[in-house]
Image 1 (cartoon, protein in one colour):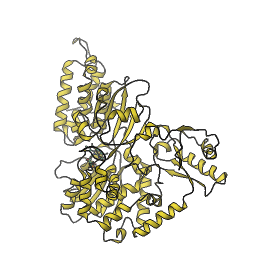
Image 2 (cartoon, helix red, strand yellow):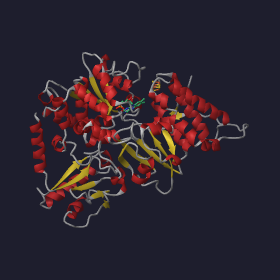
Image 3 (cartoon, helix red, strand yellow):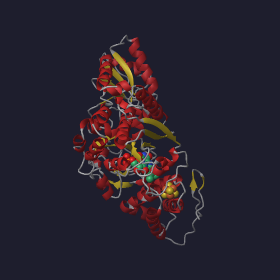
Image 4 (cartoon, rainbow, N blue to C red):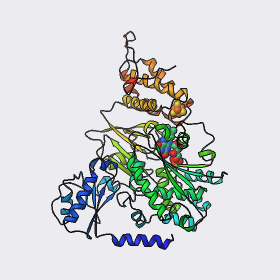
Length: 550
Ligand SMILES: Cc1cc2nc3c(=O)[nH]c(=O)nc-3n(C[C@H](O)[C@H](O)[C@H](O)COP(=O)(O)O)c2cc1C
Ligand code: SF4
């Protein structure tokens, strides 16, 4: 495969494109609302109207406003329809000739769409995720060509370093530094792993990227493999994401057939193979050492670091492990240059970030913004504010993150600013809460999640999350006294400081941040009469009595 061959595929694809394309999102959110039937209806209506060659209905990925799906967009004029039912599909085709359309029409230039950026999601809703030709027509695999044919591995690492890209999996570790470490560490073999475990409640960014634009992630992984000297990649994706797995499987096969993956990529000595490993849906398996144990066929439990995966990862070999969104940023960095990428965002947080905006907000869906965008712009401007009331708090970072009160909505959303106010960027979950939300109950919910998901390997997390959940439940039930509050706080710090992995180390964060900003809500629930007879509390997990702590 040469650059000219890539250009020929792109040209053929563009030439075959009819004047009008009716794009129907068939990603998981819309698929759950019968998008497949809508697509069939659109295809049939176009054929019945004799529009073959003039109008084509195609399956695309996420069009971002997930709560209003199925979404259908007409290209090139951009007309966008929401809540399209299979019955309404023929009217969308009739609407091309000016007929009435039996679906809600959205303004694609409205605040939800106009306020957003398009880097990671640039192809989402535009390319057909199950056709490599469609991705190639959108300049796909040009960056891989440039990397393997025009750059040395060290130059690729240097470009990623200069771009300022930081890991999108949660901690924001500088991607270039990680790549350079894997590149320099000796090993007979090296591996590239894409972390698509995505276990945070309310987060579906990675799933959406894989369902909408799987080749972008594969291209990023292949560039990474070339840069660090790895010939084998794995995508670790949870079994609850069957559509993402299907589309990824198709993409790997198609890329392999064209020589974009496999042996002699673009006719060079560089070989790169990608396989999928399916996880069973344990949150802890997103933690890198647990994930690698799971890939190697072991039980998915964390091990102490060092050694880090970059030194001793899969089968003891240097392993580069990055998040889906981290890899999805790489093709544009190589194609358009690190300076272009570094021009987006803040001094220390470069590029864009994809968030899943959910909760009590008018517009729920996938949101991509430059890092440094004020939280208020995201939740009020793009999100349209709370439904029927004022925003009380915004939870970022999932079970490892914190609750940001409404007074701090002008905080820029970047790694440093969120850290300063006691939250984290995390992988991109963003849950909006209104006046009806009980912040102590929110803290209890996240603690219950961590308690259920704790792998049980170390005592502080295994026993500590149970005790913390128990204390939070006592407070919510009005059965706790001031001494319980003191116990809650000190236990939070103990669990944070002594747990083995990030799950336990961050499990107290939602509790600590609600204590910091919503302490009065805790205090209002405390009993004042110490003589009250309290019922014995038995914590339960999914309806069954929880483990007894030692
Ligand atoms: C309990 C736990 C769950 C995690 N889950 C994920 C996940 O689902 N996806 C992810 O990319 N990183 C997750 N991480 C972070 C990974 O361990 C790792 O830091 C990350 O994948 C590195 O990629 P990055 O440098 O591109 O961010 C998790 C960490 C912990 C402690
Ligand atoms: S902190 Fe929790 S999840 Fe992590 S190793 Fe310990 S018990 Fe397992």
